[in-house]
Image (cartoon, rainbow, N blue to C red; front, side):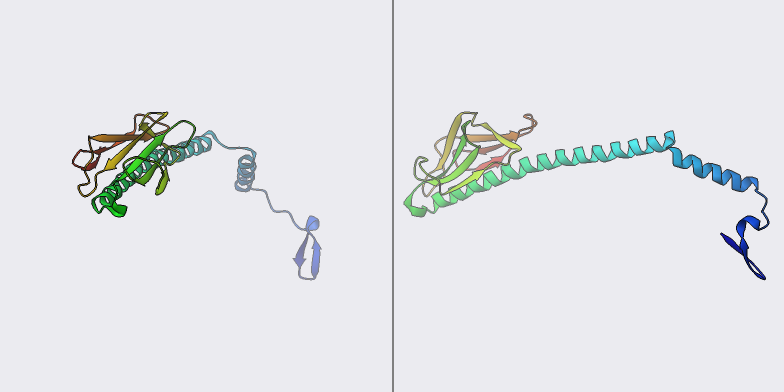
Length: 184
């Protein structure tokens, strides 16, 4: 490097040296220390921050799962109401119902159908992967069939769905003999 002199440039090595003060020495020492690693406090702050983020993610996932369970129960109830309204209107001149299938070799599904028994579906709906049927039980199926013109069923019926990851989290869709559909 060079330094400027009135008559031109001279090499820095030949320029007069400034005295090295304590302030510059401490700054150089701190700069060197900060490049060698992290302090315990810095590590604790990072671990604390990561713990908070992980807890928020877990809480968010749990709320999402519960929300999915509630929304799936509402969707099933609305599809039962659709079948009931088709029966009351006597669409195709037949009864209408929903068939719930929980047989092991298939994905759990429910299907809208017309007629007194399930033979084929007008529409088929699959449960999200985080939700399963608890009633009907595994390897079973059941149908809820609404009468023409009245929308009633022969006897009270219920469908229970739950979270795959937590069987204590459930929603029950109940249909009374009068045809009233509720979620519990």
